[in-house]
Amino acid sequence: MLYPKNWTYSLPAALLLMAPFDLLASLGMDIYLPVVVRMPAVLQTTPATIQLTLSLYMIVLGCGQLLFGPLADRIGRRPVLLGGALLFTFASAGLAMTSSASVFIALRVVQSAGGAAALVATFATVRDVYAARPEGAIIYGLFDSMLAFVPAFAPMIGALVDHIFGWRAVFWLLAGLAVLSGLHAFLRWPETCPLQTHPATLRGSFGRVFSSVSFWTYTMGFSTAMGTFFTYFSTAPRILMQALGLSSTMFSLVFATVALVMIVCSRFGGVFVRRWGLKGCLIRGMALFLAGAVVLMAGQMVLPISIVTFMAPMWIMACAISLTSAVAANGALRDFGDIAGTATAIYYFIQSVIVGAAGTLAVVLLPEASFWPVAVFAAVAAVVTLGLAGLCGPDEKHVTL
Picture 1 (tube, rainbow, N blue to C red):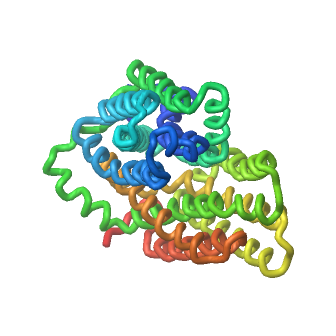
Picture 2 (cartoon, rainbow, N blue to C red):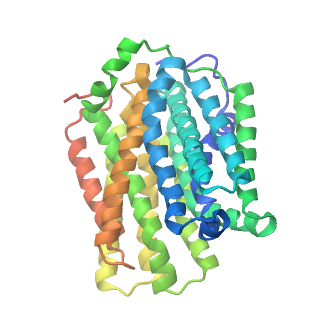
């Protein structure tokens, strides 16, 4: 595949251009968490209403991509990206100024829609430009590693901003970051859509995507990676702070080591892809998930709970997350160059559904303050992914249902 000739950026320049949009959508959720407990009093509403602002944000962020993905195929990546940045900017500024609960909820929906548009346009652009290049594995790996950092550090940033400037400054900060990112994109982001997809082509696009075994295989691999991190994120505070008594500062430092391992490993994504190919990397990633799950189970059943028995297996799984994330998007989307926006939207939507449903069930149904939620989710999801991988041909061959 020939990548767009108008995209001439080096890897660092491309990351500087694209990474802010990868981070903004997640920041919109996580940087707001420290002020959530105060918002019922500020907006003169109930805690349930404020919880709705969190739930709606997540729902719109996932479902909104199903709208903006096909739109990015029809009108191009650039207008969807810039439109998303504008929505996110104006909604964030409005959130900083309003004192009405109903307006606050509506603006959170708009903010999330802007984040969804920017996300799908960004990842469709990555697919347009880097699908056949080793840099693609590095970019996907770094993007997912950065997203792992956000839940660890964004709440601390939000708490600091709130402490110094007040809660409204949290949303002014988001608006400012969106303005800077949008202006940078306006000046430097070219259109990369290989063709303006005719509406007739889009009619069967969902069927094409859903019938591809390769798509399901790599999407399930990505869901394994993100679901493992989700269950880790959900159980780590109970294990490290409640069971082991770490302070919030020590917890943050220990928690962040997983993201650090992911970032280090992501730097070698291109090397791994050249050596093992997409499917080879996926299979090795699933093997690492199974290894980490086995070590977690052994630590839970045989040894006393400690930082080492919990974190050492998580570092193994961090390597697995990085290796899998480096190839999952390219593997899932490689057959859909003409409808990359639609395929990208479906890819992230399915992943969010699997992680939200299966990950939540693992956390809720399995024992609290234990290793079981992470171990069971990772093991089951990895086995399912390996089963699907057995139905796929080599990297150069694609199977449809």
